[in-house]
Length: 207
Ligand code: GRF
Image (cartoon, rainbow, N blue to C red; front, side, top):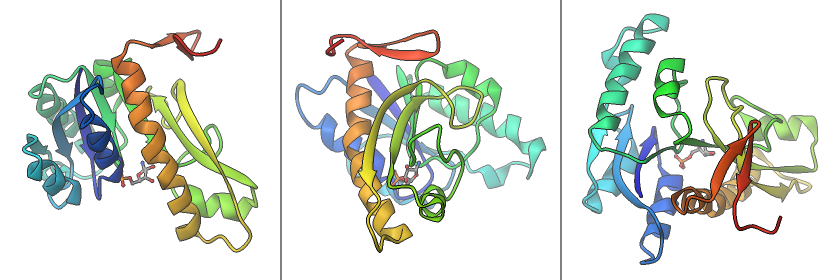
């Protein structure tokens, strides 16, 4: 199964998926990496592996709302040029228009660093610490037009420990992200995921 990964920065989730895909029996291959930032460190990682990369720089488009649709159209063109079966957002820091989402809905995934529906949006670890939650984590979900809200595929929980700071908590969550994202992609590639009444069903799991 052909996967295109969209990144904006370091690309550690992309790296985790790449590492998993090195296993001969992993059912997916990363066939391309697209970034909205030319300086995204993950681009070099992909290039070092001979994976095609594309940059659609949001700074080349009008700022604000006027630039959203034309940026997303150019992004879709770059993504389509790589012919993905699955599009994976991994640290991709743009809010996508409904037009882009509808083009890929059902084969468009994201990972969010909280236990959705808690803490949608940004600065999730800081907010978790501010709220004093005792359990935090990450969520892989299908992307819909509603931000950070689509059908949940996989989650992982981590404890919030006394003395935790944003760096210590985010590192604990990130380690779990790197564990569940490759698994979610593999489940999709194996055809095990379906969405019924807005909820994901995983075939072949203990029902
Ligand atoms: C991660 O915390 C991820 O949950 C969020 O972006 C952050 C950076 O991810 N979506 P990566 O290292 O660029 O994959």
